[in-house]
Image 1 (cartoon, rainbow, N blue to C red):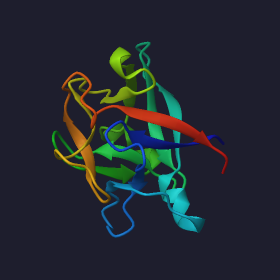
Image 2: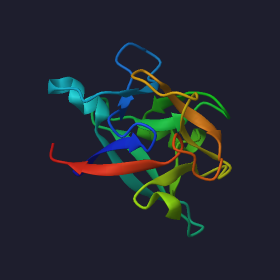
Image 3: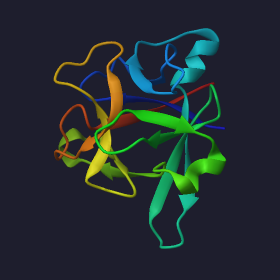
Length: 150
């Protein structure tokens, strides 16, 4: 399987990470992890089929084999099992943003006005990640996928 580390333009040194201190399966930005904990930062985008022709994907985490899902608008993300996908907001689409070259928006497929977002105005380690209103490519709402060997 191919794995990626995903990072925002606002902090390319921090990665989307399954929060190791939260039993709610939320996600935060973290510096590179090592050993088994590195799996918390490894994601596989799996294409899903909606039947209406839209390209959409889920983000599967290597650590726990769960997918990233939205709890609701302007809330932190969580993770769910693959069997729960039809009942939750867990499919995403990728929107290239020209001004950022290799970065793009990861938009909630059910509501393209919502996107994956590093919350706040400053972004350090443990910044919470959730979904928020799309602001046309602010640095905390555009992401890059970096292929890694795992």
